[in-house]
Image (tube, rainbow, N blue to C red; front, side, top):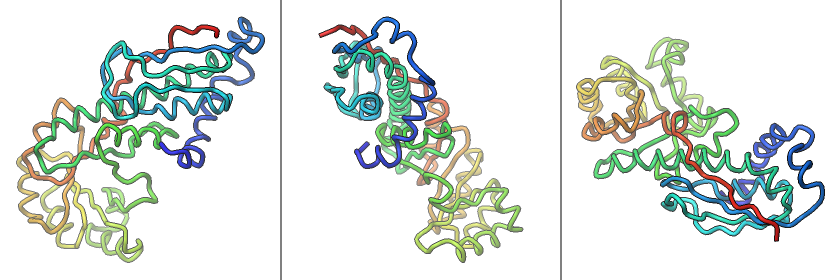
Length: 283
């Protein structure tokens, strides 16, 4: 994550996380370390996976003290193994202690998402299908979680409601029909915005395709219905399937021929990667 993105979009969330963890002072640290003392600590990987969020990890300490030095041994996107030394962090021991939990929370969460995403990406190898994330992210953590998806080899769906047109069942209900909703969206949205429509039946597939949808999302359809839907669409628009997609069941979708598969599990169900800060010592 580059410095401009970090400063403009990420710092405010990191500061909120630090303020949540330190409302007035770090009582434990101030009790055992009342004055400045320089020290260093190791960042150790405790399980195999894809590392993601190292810059975010380091930024937490820099927000507490700009003189903190992080010596990285790996880069985001690399495969890491249990026992690997990922980095050393050097600076005021009080900063190392006070920033530890928040920094690790981000790194563990982001690395877990990258690892889980990579597992699903590998299951799609050899197919024409691209893996996408969703907006099912932790509130105020979307920038970090969607970045982690990319590091794991996945791609991002729209970032937020301002980023693209997605007509779901309730939008269609509000408009009166799929055809009306698509017409209204094309008239309202800038021409660079594609219009995606979520459908649940073959009748809706036909209507969406005939009305000029750019992308049709096949939502919670069984395999046979999705295959029929692809035939009906017949290349008139791009296709996406969605609905409870996980690494346990994604392989059933590889031969359908959809352009995209979206999975909320990438961000709402990925387990964290176990990473620790160990061997703190004064220098």
